[in-house]
Length: 356
Ligand code: NPQ
Ligand code: MG
Image (cartoon, rainbow, N blue to C red; front, side, top):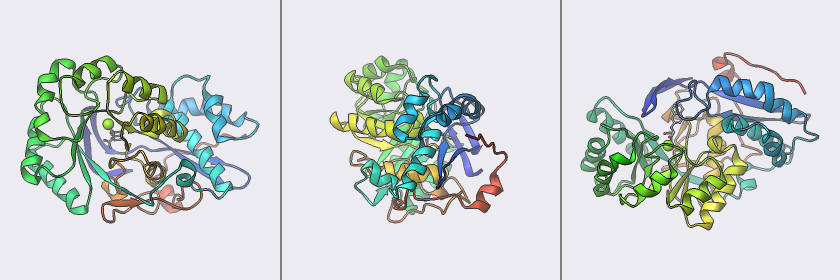
């Protein structure tokens, strides 16, 4: 699917989105799960062709071998295969969606959502110039986004943040995401962000550097939020206990699915750590499930659950539209939304059916 505009992060630039969907078919209904991988292992170790391979050879056969496709038992059935959380998340979500539809339960209701609508933030990529960045931010603020997140990397950090503060003032909720681009040696530069009153700085250091984030937290005032590092509820508990983060970005794909996402939410709430829902440029299918997750009580900060139009001219589903800076939580059974057949056919390049 073509992106409405290039999206540049510290790990590269994307102009299209190669989506991998898992569709589970049961005797009564079907379910969809979206896999957040990108074609190359630049965000995490997973990549789309690898996810297809591990699903085809290991994960789907293991799920098909289960006596009943019980959503709680998918993760244990897949546990012998190590890692591949995004691939596992897509499969578990497809089974969960079908399971909920069969019981006429909405994902939000099942997760424990407490809101009908969730505030939307927006992630703004690295741009070729400050002028271009300010135009993009102005457009998103005009659309009603409740929080601005700027992608940063060494050489594009202090200046864009200063420019956004000078142009739009100190009151707009503003945060930055480094996608692991810095090291502890950069602490003096990152400390110079303190004066801009950011909500948080997301994943400044590399995924495994929990001790480094704990050290950095004592060198800067801006709260540290982790993304790539938080791969499970255990990882969240460890990072919090070690003082490596005071805010957590929950992304179902990164952690293996919505059941683990709920566990992370509960661990963070128990530790008074605010959470928000991250984004992986999902189609409306993944977006629907993320909006339901973001309606849980501990999601007290706007997430990257932006409107469909932030990324796509035409979504696979009815588009999610921003109204008063919020997205509406789907109320139907399961994820509460389905692909529009014509839209899906338009962009489908290959399908593979794995029989039970
Ligand atoms: C993040 N998401 O919070 C990720 C980075 C990311 C919205 O910033 C295709 C293209 C898939 C870009 C997955 C946001 C992506 C992508 C994740 C960026 O770190
Ligand atoms: Mg991030």
